[in-house]
Image (cartoon, rainbow, N blue to C red):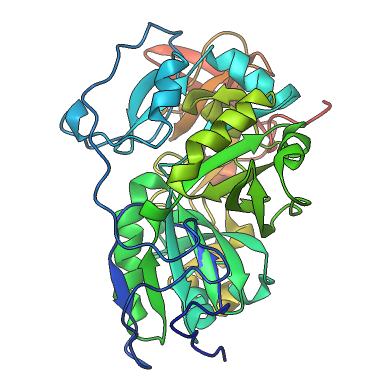
Length: 435
């Protein structure tokens, strides 16, 4: 059992990151503290931040020059107009670099700079830097923080060491996937969870609705962080040249100063390459971005982020999984430990034992054509994600198909706007280093 941290912050800390919103929930057990809770051993401002005013809305920004029509499959936005968009602290850097800016999960984000292919290859061969400040952060802390997250998340939270990281999904009672996320354990009783931008408010509400059963604080920290991802075979060496110490191993996190700015450095990413993700105060983000790009990292937009993740078959929430899919059919059974009793674990256990009607598979297009999200698979099923692979130089994607047809080597046909395209199911990942 963890002791509740003192008012001055203490070091009892387990971290998980989610997006957007600032509400704060106390569990019913234990006493209630006044004032803002600290982030344990690290706060992006050096101290606890009070709730911030909403960031200025965008007025539309400069018109983007036409770019190649890539079959991108990015998260949908429910925005009513461009004036609803928020901007990250790096908006001016993106505009000055000539980035093509698009609506994404409520934000005005760069989809490309020099071009998707160029940026993709830069990450595969050197180092690229992404602005992912639209992602959100949720802090979970208190004597029962571990017990609470063990109930909420599919993986075995107790196995995360201090300074460790873990991937998991969060499920409904019926096993449907609410979100996939990374959890960082900063200290014994304090976690930071990073969730997808479009899901932050939903995730926060879900966590809050279950917090009352535990002696735990659930705090929205989205306004306190910017987030950069530096990815590629040269990414670690580049960041290390700017840091005040060694970088954490994969699936670990530590405090460092990079380009003079205090931050959390995380050994995680979404590209299939080595690299780190940096969680830092918004005021420090422009200076750190400048230092990283001046050191040789290529700015990379969301377009290449999508092609990179799809080559290695990383899931995109809203496409490859959602509340109507359980982790087993989505191919995420490896991050589900049903014996921990997480919400929906009984349904997930049954799906694992009895099988599912459909499974998510990876495919390669044979010949010309690109399967796009929603394209029917003839004989049953549909494409969830599809793009052109700069490394494999052909159409790739993922799709749900009948479990009876899900074996690698199986031929399938996809209806791409009325034209039939042949494809073959392949083992994941589609792209392998050195292949």
